[in-house]
Amino acid sequence: MPLPTPGGRDAPVPPDDAGVSFVMPVLNEQRYLRRAVASTLSQDVPGPVELVLALGPSTDGTDAIAKELADADERIVLVDNPAADIPVGLNLAIRTSRYPTIVRVDAHSELSPGYTRRALDTLRRVRAANVGGVMRADGRSPFQRAVARAYNSRVGLGGGAYHSGGAEGPAESAYLGVMRRSVLEEVGLFDESIRRGEDWELNLRIRRAGYRVWFDPALSVVYWPRESWTRLIRQFRATGAWRGELVRRYPRRTPLRFFAPPALLVATLVSLVAGVAQVARRRPGRLTVLHLPVAAYAALVATGALGRAGGRGWRDKAWTAAVLPSMHVSWGAGFLWALVRGARDTVDTSRLDGRNTPLP
Image 1 (cartoon, helix red, strand yellow):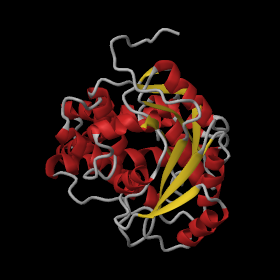
Image 2 (tube, rainbow, N blue to C red; image 1 turned 30 degrees about the horizontal axis):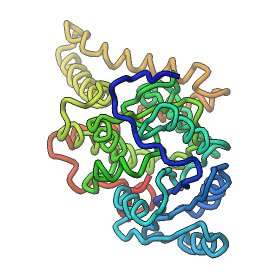
Image 3 (cartoon, helix red, strand yellow; image 1 turned 180 degrees about the vertical axis):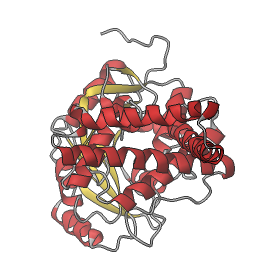
Image 4 (cartoon, helix red, strand yellow; image 1 turned 180 degrees about the horizontal axis):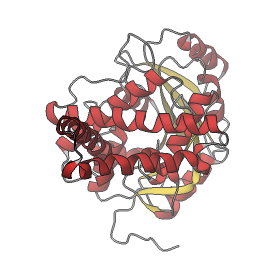
């Protein structure tokens, strides 16, 4: 198959049996860690493998589970990540690992069978530096399933290929990512000053260095989203804040879809002010037009919730209709705050009440 992006730099292709290093940042994941590790170590890989767990300061028994798993399988390596930051943990794991291909795995995810072998084949075929696939969000409770539906919907997260699928080809970023170590070392690994959106920023530097970042829809990973409303809102506020910070750092590189949630928030505030003015004047007047963006958004949410992607019964659809604006408004609020002031020390506190933790 001829390369669709002639002129780009080819990433090195190590021998098929050179080995693969899986890296996973972990914090308070006692409910998910065993399944994440099992799906990782069951991957069919030609050559040796290792799984490096970067352990943040968990308080729920995660460390004991990790030690038990490591004692039972010599392929599992443990490193401490006292800072708990995602990029710090990933860099610690990468520096500890040994093999020429790095596969990022989250403790809140499960790799599908054949994921790694397919990714290795794709890396070799297109000479990419990083390849990723589709995030298949799933849930166990009614709320978590509603969040998963929002993740998988174009209405929910803006239609990025790794959320809603699409054709194989060059990509702006990659979900998780299967990466060549030599390229990571060339561009400087993850930026440890970025607490969320670190994958987007890394892939920007990879592309700036001339290498290919590739999307392969045949790759899929199950992702388990937040289990409660407050945790979801805290997660999305932090994510929005760091997107705002990335806009400050890379204003010409930001996709337009990132501006949709903050634009919604601004439109909502304008609509509220217009409504107050209309009530005070006791007549609609020309201000009615200022309500149209919010009305259009409400129609979009209703369409998404009432359609097939909104779930099966009316309860599913009601949950979806409630989750969508919760995600968008909290994301937009974080974005606007950081756009003005910068993300600074914003972290995602959604993994544990009362503690700062930026892990996914």
